[in-house]
Amino acid sequence: MQEKRTNVIKLRYLRAGEPSGREYTFFTPEQVEIGDLVDVEILSEESRSHGIVTAVNVPYAEIEPFNDRARAIIGKTVQETEEDSVEKAGSEEKNLLDI
Image (cartoon, rainbow, N blue to C red; front, side, top):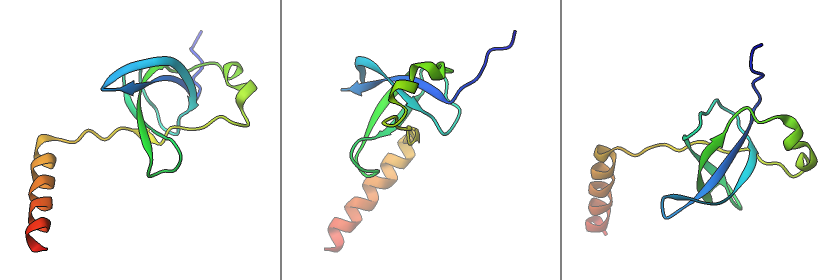
């Protein structure tokens, strides 16, 4: 029998880069896998936290009691490359010199 896919996942928030605390259940707008890093809205879209996916295809029954308060993740965390970091640092340096 084929496994039923759902858009419900579980994740643990990251603190100092490590999974911490209990699991929380979220909806996901995109396909994710166990171990993926995701962004989660805290108070507004500008205020984000990061989590790590601990379970996928979670049965809807687990989120139904909280359905009116259930939230969705923003999406997968975009990993910044070393080149992006150097480019960003150079841009910030230029802006400081322009002032």
